[in-house]
Image 1 (cartoon, rainbow, N blue to C red):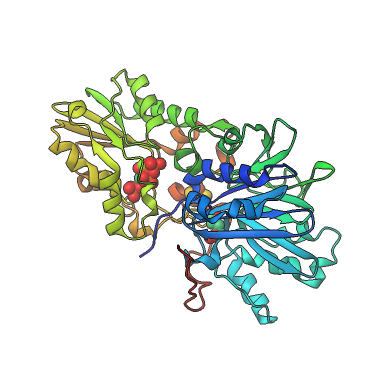
Image 2 (tube, protein in one colour; image 1 turned 45 degrees about the vertical axis):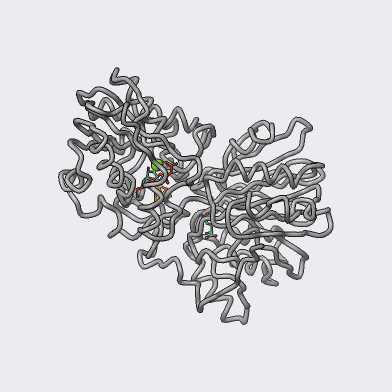
Length: 477
Ligand SMILES: O=P(O)(O)OC[C@H]1O[C@H](OP(=O)(O)OP(=O)(O)O)[C@H](O)[C@@H]1O
Ligand SMILES: NC(=O)CC[C@H](N)C(=O)O
Ligand code: SF4
Ligand SMILES: [Mg+2]
């Protein structure tokens, strides 16, 4: 069964006495972006060391194993994975450490390469041996190709061969190179510590975690080099030749409320989406309650715009992560059950507006509506802070097949009936786009509109690089 999964998170820091520890803290703050595997690669200026493992960063780098100490080096990059190409497998954990004719390289990638299959076929035909089943590995093979190595700027040359989404970090022994695809699908930000050391992260919340300051985003189509001489920049495509296509689902769900991405505060964006939702779908009710966590900011906006009191109809367990993680529908159902508890006193006898950021399969909504009714809610009005999701994503979000999306092939009334709510209202796409500060065409909205920023292969299969069953067991003590 396919899974809905979240994003990957990347972090890097150059020439800092506590680089590995800071990478750990940076990854910790980005944990919401990926919980399948975690890893850190570090360099002493000449050699790179790397450790990756399955699970959350706290588990992979638990103190008893001492890997943070073993990795100690002044420069490091880290990665948190949610698979979009290739299964959840230790061989697919990142950073990817490889050695080629030019020396060592470690790669950490957030996004999804839509031409990985074609590139891999081409390189396998030359006799290349791949050690993983994920898209990211093709980048290293491209870099190693002798005719690419001899180019004046091999990395820029290689990045031009990639199609799709990549916010990607390369650790060479003497430097970090951070690059972003020309559409800027995924966020990537630059920061500086109090001691003036440069760092790079998927979201600004990672800088808050290490008391660094946000400087700017890595621009779409840009490569930023961080080395002994400081920070320098070049573009691998002509700046301004491509209209960006930032994933607006980052604002809706993925990113942390405390982050700023694509120039906007995630919390303010979501709050505004709640206000617009209240304007577009008003209702008479007694309380507004969020589905925590990511529905909370939108519910605050809905309550303030409607004047209906905000209350906590649900509390969430801190011991259950994002429910998309669970690898089967049974586990997702169970995760929702364990994660969200209804506060009877807040909802009994009330007309309740329930606000969530998104309804994807409907697992959360369907799983909880009954509990609200059992707790005595008189009416339930579901309000959703993004439009109905109808198309799969090929750019780094592992959305299920069309068939699994509850809005696919259902009218609004059919969805309402399926969710068993008294009324249902989704924000419009224009309403959602009005909450962002960039013009609407600067965002990718394909999972709602079906309008992809580039041609996609709709027959894409996440496991297509899994040529045979790869098995490597995690070393669990
Ligand atoms: O309709 P569904 O298939 O249930 O998917 C949508 C739900 O899943 C996500 O929450 P999640 O638990 O992943 O994370 P959160 O704690 O950040 O809200 C999202 O915020 C919705 O609540
Ligand atoms: N969600 C992501 O960004 C995943 C990165 C990469 N495509 C992988 O599957 O490992
Ligand atoms: S299809 Fe949806 S989830 Fe994927 S990049 Fe576009 S907006 Fe984001
Ligand atoms: Mg949620």
